[in-house]
Image (tube, rainbow, N blue to C red):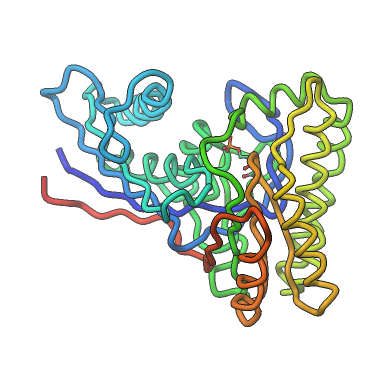
Length: 323
Ligand code: PMV
């Protein structure tokens, strides 16, 4: 059968997704808005092969077992069910992220896997349908099928495009503040927050307004307003986590130092705005013209390990490769 290579890029949410409306279907409790970034890409090859006795999965050259393999097999099983196939697959995936970019790879990973596996099994799905399949594995992955700006509504099955990559000349600067994998994964963190945080309800109730504000600002190309909504979203999300019992605390003193520096830069006239996900790194949205100045300032914050600038990136794509 055909060997398909798919490429998908990481995305960073400005209006965050945190919380599930339906655990089994993996439907988000709140709407989210993201920017897909160039450079941070996952390349995944899939080939279904009737000689195989089970699915085989390798990531960055290492054979996967246990839960990481299981998550890939679950997606392959859904693709097979949809195509009426019972053939196993060989999956080879690599993350072309700059060394230790400190970014979660699940969004680009499951987007690339959903696209490669559906094409390899013979399905011809729309980007929205592939997005829906990716969402079952990781809701943020649903957004990585689209280039530029994408949204995923509360309870929605698939993400959609909001604006193309060239809508607005902005960049995202990633300030890496720690090494190593995150301590608590996003699903576990969301469930713990929902179960134990008295602020979770407030987060879910307030998120649609924050999302609407961010979306409006984006469409109006109003960077200051978009940045304000983005900061409100990340801080409200982290506040819900900090009020969990025990607290879910992803932010470190270095994270806060970067936040302070971003605020200072703003008071000096630079348009720069911060956001953090389920980890200590800070992603800073700024205009393309101010990127070099903001980057050199962030590099000097004590504790920052590495700084990299990423432009808005393209939609996920695929091609057939010779076996
Ligand atoms: O899609 P998941 O399960 O990896 O969750 C992503 C959650 C955040 O990164 C914190 C927010 C987001 O919208 O991407």
